[in-house]
Image 1: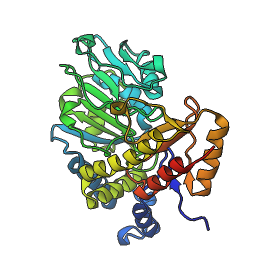
Image 2: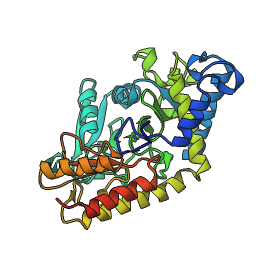
Image 3: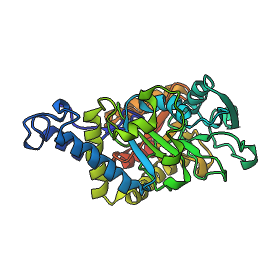
Amino acid sequence: MQERVFNFSAGPATLPEEVLKIAAGEMLNYKGCGMSVMELSHRSPEFTDIIQSAQSLLRKLMDIPENYKVLFLQGGASLQFLMAPLNLFNSDKKADYVNTGAWSKKAIAEVKKLGDVKVIADSSDKTFSYVPEIKPQSIRKDASFLHITSNNTIYGTRISSLPETSIPIVSDMSSMILSEKIKVEDYGLIYAGAQKNIGPSGVAVVIVRDDLIGHNLDIPSILDYSLIAKSESMFNTPPTYGIYIAKLVFEYLFDRGGVEAMQSINERKAKMIYEAIDQSNVFEAHVKTKEDRSLMNIPFFAESDEINQRFLKEAEEKGLKTLKGHRTVGGMRASIYNAMPEKGCEILADHISNFRP
């Protein structure tokens, strides 16, 4: 039987082994009810307890204020490219966007179908290898919201400071949620696909301020945040098993000291890998500006694809899996989400340091 490996996939990504063991133990009989969670009715008291606990745990982990709704949805983060503007647009249907990579490009392409979009900052000129300056004077005061992608999964950048603005900030936090402390009040809406730091694919989390929803009566009911909030995320059958795993992950994070503790661990993990890359004569990081570097996704590469392939082959032999970089960047990419053990990062850093072409 194959032993567990260090899975550096960008998503679906590694999950805590402790969580998988609990889920395995409860697979056939969840807490004595004689059924798997996958078989439970979403209206059952057992699942009601699961989803309410998941919401309560996430609120505590992120210090989410009472005037924000927490929703568990289907469709992944990609559906939020449409749901966010549909729910937040004012009558002028204007929105400002920051373009920092593949996912922000997709979000911009979708919102262009709905309204007036202005890209106020863009790092595509250098293959998204830095975070562009977001100038407050560039933000339209009559725009419904400003959209950012807080962490760039593919290119490895991270927005670490927000511009001063009077309009709500919407953030796609799919690849960095729960990895570092943030102030929820700084945002009007946060959304994230689960398959990085929360759980399996199939669930999206939306955190939205109360006053921003319930105004648009012309959108389909299934896409209306206010109706979904009123039904406690059960407007239709939710992704029940994914929400159950998310609850287990939230409990796991609490047991380890919460988000603040995870941030400290993540900073150590990222530091050891970046230092190995920066001190190497073989590899270089895609993102050169240190303050723009992601804590979660680290793309790096050698001067030739032949060297990259040799590195990947030798990494696999050491149990370091799914390190191949995205096709638009090439080379390697280490995704070191919360569930990636420090030991995996240590072995990777050592492999980078000792690799000889």
